[in-house]
Each structure stands twice: as C-alpha cells, then as structure tokens.
Length: 143
Image 1 (tube, rainbow, N blue to C red):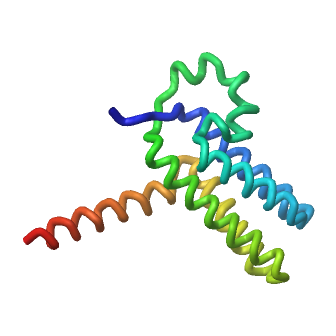
Image 2 (image 1 turned 120 degrees about the vertical axis):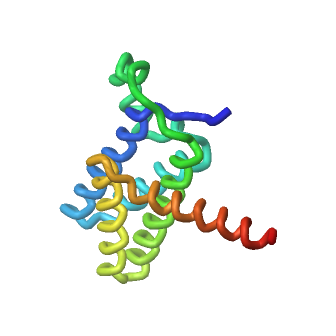
C-alpha cells in the first residue's frame, strides 16, 4: 500500500517556503533561512504532519482535504530532502560570508517551490529520472 499525503498539505508547505523566501530576500536575514531549514528538516524527519506550515494551515483546510487528490509520501520526502539540501547550502554559504552563493541557493529553492505551486514539480521530474536511471541500471546489470 502506497502512503499518500493530501495535496493541500503539500501546497501549504510550498506556500510557506515561498513566503519565507520572499521575506528573506526583502530582509536578507539569515535567521529566516535558519528557521525555514529547521521547519523543513523536522518535516523530513517526522513527516508532513510535523511540518509547521502544514500544522498552521491544517485547521483551515478541513473539507478541502477530504475532496482533494493526494501525492505519494515517498515523492514528497524526496522533494523535502531536496529542500533541506538547498537550504543547507544556502545557510552554510550565508554563515561563511558567501552571500551571493547563499542567495543563489535560496533563489533556486524559491523557484522550485513557486514552480510547484504553479503546477510543475521540478523535484518530481528529478525523482522520475532517478527512478528511470535505476531501473535501466538494474535491467542492464542483471544481463
């Protein structure tokens, strides 16, 4: 049985990322990236229901969740892992004084989250290609 997560929860997280990164670009506060990193890391470690953005939005999503589609938890964990990696790169860069690199990693994260909100999941494409690559490797490795 494939575990699923309601799409409104996924969108809540994506919206939280985008809004946080807009606040970061306006203020250039490293703390925003740090807090966003911890929100995403907690979600990665404990699942979507532990994600602060999902927890905030959940009371307002009521009937929308029951009528919505779902996405595979495995895919969302992969996307969340990518988010944590980009936020780690951004945070480390900023803390080491590499502001341009930190801003680029944050912008890449923001672009991916915004694209997902608009209907195109870059992480999903990467995940699909990875799965295709593994399948080809297994097929050719077993011959």
